[in-house]
Image (cartoon, rainbow, N blue to C red):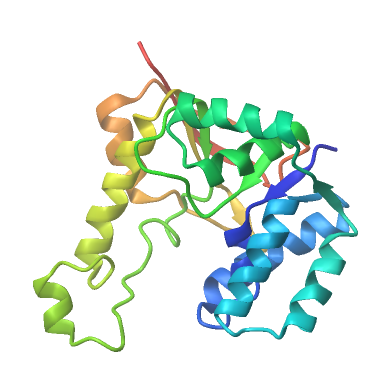
Length: 237
């Protein structure tokens, strides 16, 4: 089975007490990868995780080291001069940040089939792109106003997710950028989660009406931790 590479931000979210939703999602993905012995990280991820959790005072140095010793029991991709040079080629070709390019190159070097990351940079180009998890409950994400700022101030300045309308607008913009970011793009949603049916995001219907090539049902390959998918597929013409 191919490996599943975890970017630093996902492992950090697994230990973030401030965001229970992301913490739960990150822990579930990591648990499945650990059970299947498919979890992959890099030495860069280890260094970044240690720095972040200490800076945010979530853990003591001893506690952070204990987490890293656990992760070190799985596949850890080292960096050498050759891998750094390959990463820099990726950075120049796809306009990645240097740090993102190092993560992507580590996943490639480990022959991983999936790279779990919160996001990469806006404006990136890919050879092909598969976006998962676009069900109605998650996309657009629900409004989440900042509890420490007056609601009127948030609405006045159009802060993202301060209202459902703003969250919807931002989600539409993100989807438009994703569809334009590769010659082939697949947007997908699992049909079931915890024995309950999932509905596709209503935003997918809008994209399909404007640029659809095809809508199809497909079964995810064995190496992907997703049940049966409903997918929208786009090809550049």
